[in-house]
Amino acid sequence: LQPARTLRSRLLLLEEGVRQIEDRLEDVQPRTMVVAGGQDLVLPSAEEAANLKKAMPRAFPVVLPSAGHAILSDPQVDLLQLMRKEGFLINKRVFTSPIRPGQREGFGLPGPVEMPTKQEVMRTGQDYTATLRRLLSPVFFSTLEDGTVVEGVEGLTPLMQQRERPLLFVGNHQLYALDMNIMVEELALKQNRLLRGLAHPILFAQEEKPSPSAGGDNGTETVVNPMQELEARDKERRKKKEQEQGDDNSNTFKDLQSTYRTFGAVPVSPTSFFRLLSCGEAVLLYPGGVREGLKRRNEKYELFWPTQSEFIRMAARFEAVVIPVSSIGAEDSVLMLQDANELLENPFLGRQSRELEKIVPRARKTEVEGVDESFVPPLIAPSVPGRLYFRFGKPIRLTKNLKEDREAADREYANVKAAVDDNITWLVRKREQDPYRDFVPRMLYENNPLGPRRQAPTFKLK
Image 1 (cartoon, rainbow, N blue to C red):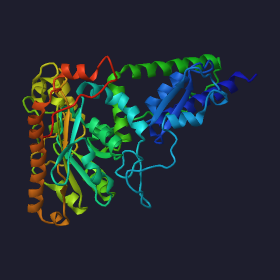
Image 2 (spheres, rainbow, N blue to C red):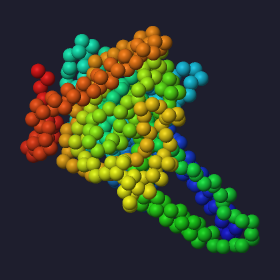
Image 3 (cartoon, helix red, strand yellow):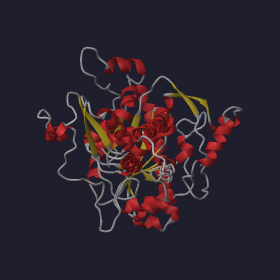
Image 4 (cartoon, rainbow, N blue to C red):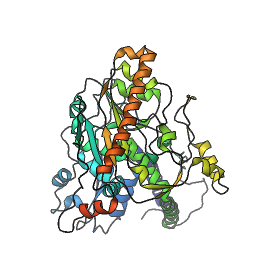
């Protein structure tokens, strides 16, 4: 037996180590498979596996129902087969662009990131896009170089496979960007290319972490029961964790932050944009930004782009290929209860909205003509789900001369904006011919009780 003071010292040391590790789990970037036994009678392994999934950006739990504590000693567990099944075992790491000497790579940085495997994309989809896909049944159209429109994203294949020129996807923000994750997921699965989104800085805001204590020893000689003290500390820590887990909005937002970083998003800035283009990445840009994503009443599918054409001039420096992206459907699936202007005047919610507007960081550091950076999310409610439609427009190849010729860059900017707007109009018109545009007939078709689930067809192109 150890003296009480020695045992207390060692247990507090162990507790301090756990606390320091917990604070750093969110910085672990490699893909991580957490294997736990459902019949573990020594430790709450299944519960801890779920906690690690929340704490680590790319962790996913695999709970083996009949396995106990010593999984690796269990003859029924084939770890190699399990790793293959879950897509965890890979022969070669694949990055979104080549890593150059001295170049920094990592999540949230404007450089190469490791491509998620298809299983990883699908696992993430179960948490974020599966429900939306079931309700909104998205359909995609792409445009060939000669202007021919085809169903699906296969029309993008030649561009997505080439690596000589960076790609710049420029689109319209739907309300709350409800459609964006589905589009990124579709291209990751069907084209094996990750769109590097230029995201609002709020998605990269980090909470300040309290400095870890030195173990709680204040230097006095008081001797207490070490097990009782550890139990009290553990109870306090668990209570704090339960309070944090009880805040659903906070946890959901943290999960969202982690997912955006894992899937290649970086804080929007001219520097990030430049570096991604210089790496030859496929970049996703929404010029309408916050103003377009947080629309006011009666502004469905309107564009709110700045008057300046700076992103065209920078993209021309690298001879990027611009792909206009248009999408509709999400804004037909919600009801606008109060928009930003109405919320600011609301006697109950106005103060809270104004405080939020003050503390949220601005996406643009300087004032830009024609841009409203006010971050006041409208109050919305779900409506009868519509159907999501996407169209990738005809590619626009930029030339280096646009970098110096502002007038020519302005004309090309206008062409890109017109392409996005025209394709929105095309989708709005064509969806009238979709026999499964409405929710009820679509659900009846897709959830056939006599067979497997299937996606409803859409309008004919000819």
